[in-house]
Image 1 (cartoon, rainbow, N blue to C red):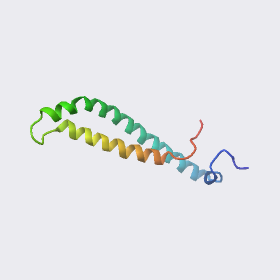
Image 2: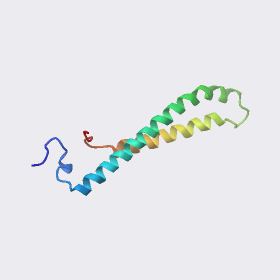
Image 3: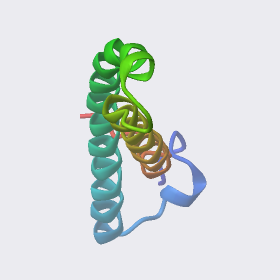
Image 4: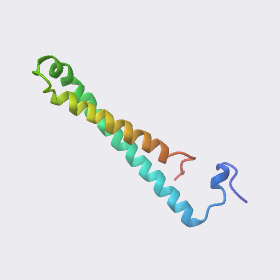
Length: 92
C-alpha cells in the first residue's frame, strides 16, 4: 500500500525515479546553500557600497557592481534551489 503522507505523484515511483528525485532535491539543497553563502558575502559588501557610491569617481564603483552580481547570484540560486527542493522532504 502506498504511503498516504506522500503527495499523489510520488506514491508509486520506481526505485530509479526515487533516486532521481533524491538527486534533484540534493542539488536544490546545494543551490540554497550557495545562495546563503552569497547572502553573507553580500552583507559584507554592503558595508562598502555606500562609501563606494559616495567617493568613487565617475562610473568606477567596483564594490557596487560586485554587490549587484552577488544579489543576482542569490536570486538565481535561491529560486532554482527552492524549485528543485519542492515536494515532501526525505526523512533520514
